[in-house]
Length: 426
Image 1: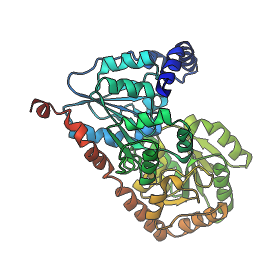
Image 2: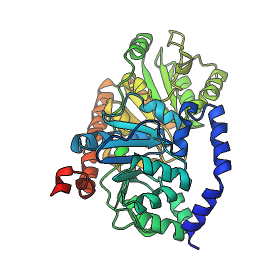
Image 3: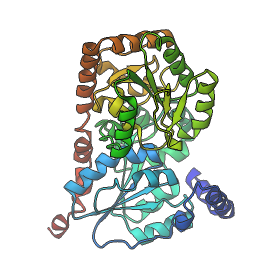
Image 4: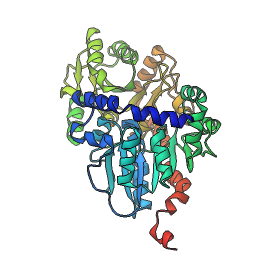
């Protein structure tokens, strides 16, 4: 019996457990109870007539990264509808109002054979695009069995995942080899995917870097600007445990040198807002939290953005942005978004997830530890001309990423051509 057959049997037998799991999540608010049927493959809206492209992204980060691709698809294939599926309630909330016209959102069915079959029988996609590392065996094998072309876009394979998948060649190799196209984020990811069975993967670039940041809420931005006034300020964005303490240490050290200093912090996981606020208050800092609707007041030292999808609010006012996940061993986060806003970008020593972008910055902004972060922030606060030069350098780096969606579409052109009614008629 093949590994795929074993997987199908196990998932088929797991239906009662999966149902109970979804219902528990719904009771805890982690699933949209009103749309829970979608997780069982039951559509909540009708399929439009004509060709349809199905694009699946796991959660918030993946969904936001494919927005530029969605927009490009709508421009280049206006005759085809686009169905976007995600697996989390937070992703649907963040995407609300941001999807291009003609795009339908549904929650993805869990990878149970019956629920996947129901979903595919309803939507009948002509082309299925899976984002990043979404490799669901039942969905992939059933889509291909129905004649649906499949592609893996913005594909990534971390070193840890690569080592894990190498122990399961009977499962991963047929999944990857079955894609009509595999488009990786960078050459390193392409090499790993090829070693696991992908056929001639290409590396047209990382869609996450091409995503235009959302415009901040005008009222919230006006309120924050009014609260900050002319106070010197800097931002620690997408922080992980330990990095908020580092930001607090920088603030405490620099406040005497820069009267009125404001430190803005956006934890990578907003649900950590309570813990971060407690930690900073224990250090004697006055804290305001976005999730609580607390404004930035004259006595505020630190403003915590503990909400989803609003990071552009802080990038719009910060001028200096430290990219989190880089002082801690997390590989660093995306430096492109602060670059779009012209922020001077700082980062720690671990930027493995964006090493090529860091290279474009010619080593500028790298700090080895908290002491160097403190001195880098101080230098930029004290020198507006240097801050402006760093911001222009980061903006230029960000603008160079905007061609990635078109590069991805060019690689998908043979598959997209099949959706053209004129081509089919010919």
